[in-house]
Image (cartoon, rainbow, N blue to C red; front, side, top):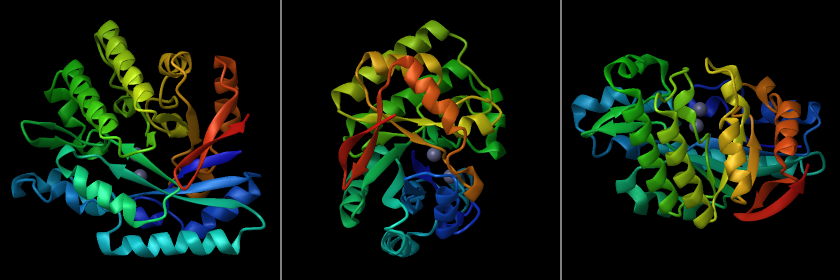
Length: 281
Ligand SMILES: [Zn+2]
Ligand SMILES: [Zn+2]
């Protein structure tokens, strides 16, 4: 099996160095892994008023910008050192910001990525950020209407997808992480349906991310109706644990694969230098 969503202590909220993840993956019998470390986030606050900087504590979310080349080099070193035991891919998880498309595009072209994930971890109200997957800001969920939060989140996803910068849309329904669900489910379903259509049109894929199972919500990202919708629209899928500790590599993959097979998926996707290839399950 393959696990394409792996972090490490480099992102400042994970544990263990990259090599520990490789060893854990070998022990668990995986044949291929991809590191998907958070891309440095200085660009997220560059144009943000100073009074809001504490609402996106980037030093807890990713390595500093000047450290990123070392990450790339270390992944390439491990790729060579372990080539007889494991295939190792170079990825990154980029936070999308619509005013920074040129920057993101330039950075993506700088490195020999096998794949690039696009993520939304913050949304904005009149310029004020809400890092909705950070437990320090949960009070925002009380302050705003949950359906409005989902609407803004989905709008941001729409812009991410339309930017055509990425290969994979990360954890599509991340906003459910702490158990806050949309009230108007029929509206939510229709918004998700639009998002899936846009993903399909832009030839992007989604991931089945098992990390949600370790969080308050207690289930994978995305939930079943979204997986089914993706399958029906012919959207491909890849698989990731979103590991932030070495022993989380391959987390609940048996369950994940069963779920995908039951829906009808016959393969998941792997990437080499941003070219897709099927991996039959
Ligand atoms: Zn992370
Ligand atoms: Zn993420």
